[in-house]
Amino acid sequence: MSDLDVQIPTAFDPFAEANADDSVAAGSKEYVHVRIQQRNGRKSLTTVQGLKKEFSYSKILKDLKKEFCCNGTVVQDPELGQVIQLQGDQRKNVSSFLVQAGIVKKDKIKIHGF
Image 1 (cartoon, helix red, strand yellow):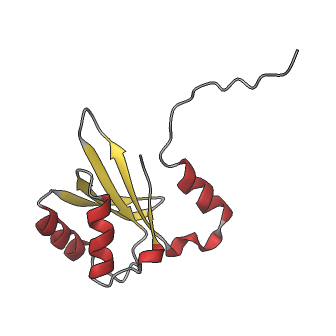
Image 2: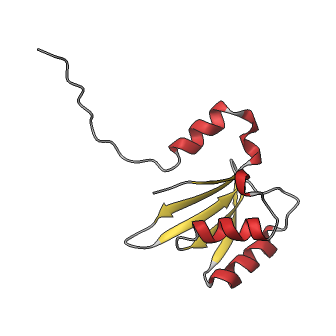
Image 3: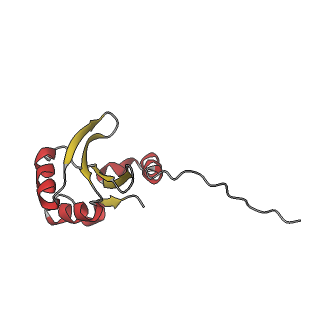
């Protein structure tokens, strides 16, 4: 009889790869992480973390809200620092906005989720 590998289904953790990257590489602070979180039903939340502290988060948020016609806020997290939250799936929009505005280079953005 041969050994069969049985995989037990587990819950999907969208932050697992980010946590693995943070624990392995000490220089991962230089990346800007754009994530999506599922709320309820079709509602979702886009988070942006890892921007340099010298930027004004409130001004970036104001431009993002105006550009994408969505609401958002800046949240202070004890572990991650300041995080920008936007309503809806804005991952592609945010990454292209950050590159076009010259805030971050394209190779320094990591998009997580789905």
